Length: 311
Length: 284
Image 1 (cartoon, rainbow over the protein chains, first blue to last red):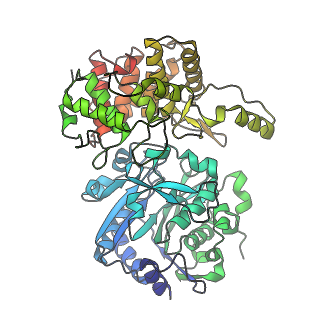
Image 2 (image 1 turned 90 degrees about the vertical axis):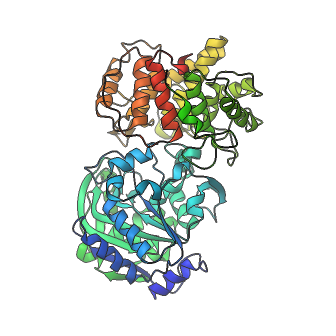
Image 3 (image 1 turned 180 degrees about the vertical axis):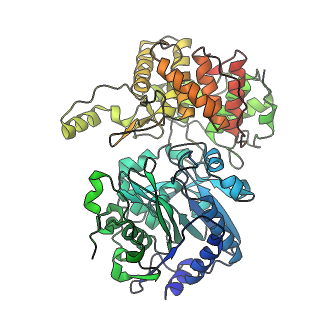
């Protein structure tokens, strides 16, 4: 049923998950960044029966800061594994694209994070979304104070946008996962570094708006080593040992929250998305159940209220 | 003097420059022309076509948008005001008025009153910088470029209003120093945690604060030198060079990091080389 849902998204016939279909979310144990990731990712995508033959796919990792030794950025080996997997599935083209929010020197960030050394011909495959051509795009029933945003043509024109975030706590919104990762699609070339227009319009609200702006999407969350504490930059690495994936980003994020020991009902943007997918009863867990892989991420004091009570 | 011919190959047929490839945008076009000016080229046909591109896209309010596809004037207007006046049909005075009349949203009396009501404290005036995008907060990079542009205009034609605006901008920068002495994008603390500075914005701030008493900046200069030793970005290193030279400090010798060839990176590197050879067009 999840595969049918995924195929329907890609045909462009659906804005969101069908009302009565549970959202399929995979949780797969992945203890480290090594060559086994390639097979793991292939199996994960096979479980979701994604049909990307002849389609243009954009992978959107999270690149934030210069620090190869911490857990700030999506690991390049995972990005490459996903890149190769989509090519093997017959995608017409796979682009890696990101628009960092604090530092303008994107290729330098990618270089430092190991993307050039890990991904062959990385520079040819990469688009800096901050500097891409843009189109003013109306927001459908926005939650924020914005009625439109300039968005990069690369993401507007793709057939599938794959959010590849790190699993991290976040000092403003509690957790940053696949939905928050779409902040990186908003072009700094228009709005600056940081993309302050989003903060003024409401962070949780803009996350919810970007979620609806990209209905043809998929998420694979890098939770092998995430970040706890004062995320998304000054926290500490946290070994969670999982990858979490699915076509419903809200359901994926809710599952990630449960793995991190966070109550998804306490995350503002998940509530604003008003999405049935965050309710466990509407999620079909593939692979591991969140309870079996739960590892509580340390939270800042003002977010302790989000701690998920064990049931 | 450095050679600007590397920029010739990157110019688009419409006369503008792209960031890397593709459509022409305002920022790379302005940096390319600034770099060419630094190499002594202000009259070639390449430069002429670049100025014509900019003139075509000046907006009715006097400012410029980041690209022809965006409907709204932004911080890039300040970059264009740094360019030598070639007498091309650009309404520089209108651009200057647009820039001088703009500041970060947090500086407005409405926002300051709102902040005071919410927090119970009146925030001390921390100067007034410039935002990246209208009606948002001021940040370090656009404030540096804005200060450099107004500083240039004030040198050409002294004005109390411009002088006051420049002083406000300097105050903004001096009130947004990170605890380590440098500057980042403009957020020194988040939820009580100190943020680290970045090399590129530290360089920009030191450049913009040219003329400020060295004693005030000695911690910042130390930080800049430490950034210089460890910097892994050619563009950021170029900004550091510009900043150190503007503060009469000779950057140490060190190998340059690998560049990635964007037009702004190439242009800023040329600008830094020209400054090292005695010509800093940001301060002319």
